[in-house]
Length: 310
Image (cartoon, rainbow, N blue to C red; front, side):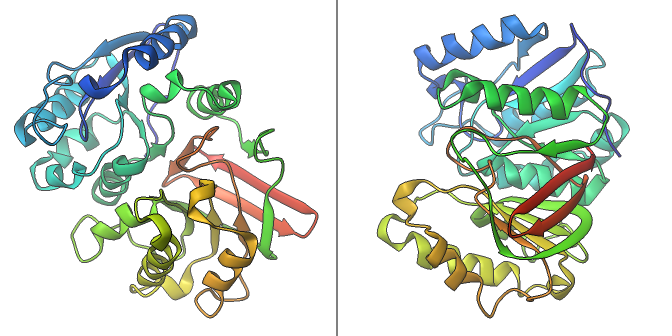
């Protein structure tokens, strides 16, 4: 189930299901608003998005209310998150998945929002989107690439080929091969919070897109490795059709040698694995569809990543 694409003048609702809109720096807010004013969309903010508690978030009730209201409002065509955080999984038992399924809309964000995107896809079949937050459009880092990727994915229907940004320069093939399938994934340590819950998508025959942020300091690669191992040990993981890794901050130490060591003995050797694609916690980033279909052709000097349905 794919929501209608955006049209000029459509209303986009900003919600804060993780950290509060109130934590966004005024300079970032100002720059983000410049993009939205130029984009031709009508941006509105949820009632409770600036509520702020000691965890830089707001009550479960307030966050659920804002999400339900955004899905319920027929004028809202897209829901975008303010920023990420750490606690969006608190909302999962309280969401009205029937309401969401009956009012399919674009939901976009990344990082902690991975919880909502994958859970909603699992419970309703609605394709969701790992992509920019509202505040992302207030940051530098080849912003024109992020903006174009966002608009191409959410305003157009035709197959979308992903090409490297100037910052990334090129993507790297770790294992050659070809595959096609539905995407699940996003932020690795966040999606792993869904394991063993009713909100975890079925991993069978899927293509994994995974990235992570450095909240572990010098132990990042250790944490990433065991999180990847955990994901690849759940039922059905042996049927995964391909894996795409995002880009990592330099502090992560995720060199080509390190990621090669990490996937060794974990990943079937007969599936394509691509590294350094433009998504993650450094800019610029693409927007990709969780639940949408991707085709991958990975050869040493020929990488093709195409979203056929998004």
